[in-house]
Length: 337
Image (tube, rainbow, N blue to C red; front, side, top):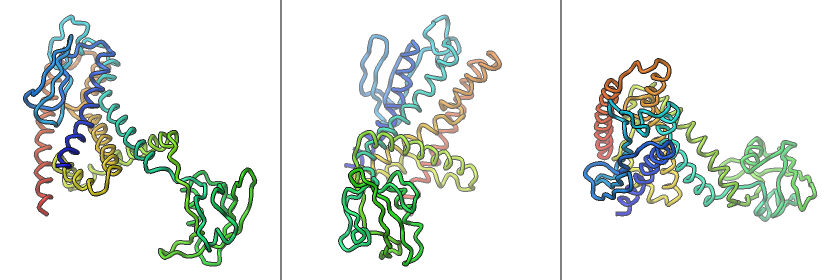
């Protein structure tokens, strides 16, 4: 039951912000929005606003923002129709969904970093009898350099200590102790996992500003990783075996339950960035494909009719539906392996 709830929450966290991005940007550009829907299929809830019909659909996968003149051949003279807006307004509206997914990923990763904390270069404790304690290091000392190389965070400290390759090799550690710079010569000892350590633990910070900074950096790094992964898919012969659909996502969420809330947050960020990137691919029926048509019309004039564009997007939608069926079939097969 918990898995079902988490899956629904996940899909809502992915789809609602995406469509909300389209909706808010459409309103900002003064485009008439006829319906804002969460989910697909028959409506189980409807509420008519001043201009927009708000609905919740039976299947909690997907959603849409129905704008006046978006998929019709004739937008007429309505200045608030999507097709009658300037090219840059159309692009802003189309890209806003993916932008919201990136924002949700940033929020999830910021919370993840804030709760997990960030290891700093300040010493939390020095193990009694360990090399650092024997040399004179103590809790509260802030490591500023190792072997003359300045360190900014605990990752730098770990990287410098990882350079030690023999039992008789010493390191020069410079610390800030209450404003006074002190130097210590320490001979690391070999740990059970064959690393050379000096016997210190790092102070973990839960500072909000550091969490925001690390959340932003994690979002950028994860986006780069996903971009590379999508590029690698086109280089392999078994690309479909490396793609998961709704069934695969359910399995991932089910596995995340045993790892706790932080792992679930990471999954939300990962899939949200995936959704953003996939939606911006220049494929028909996706936001990226629609942006391509806006650019083509900007460059060539109205060389492509609305009717042709609708047919291209319809063909693209059929292709995506067939792809979804194949991916789902593969997901089901993997469940029995």
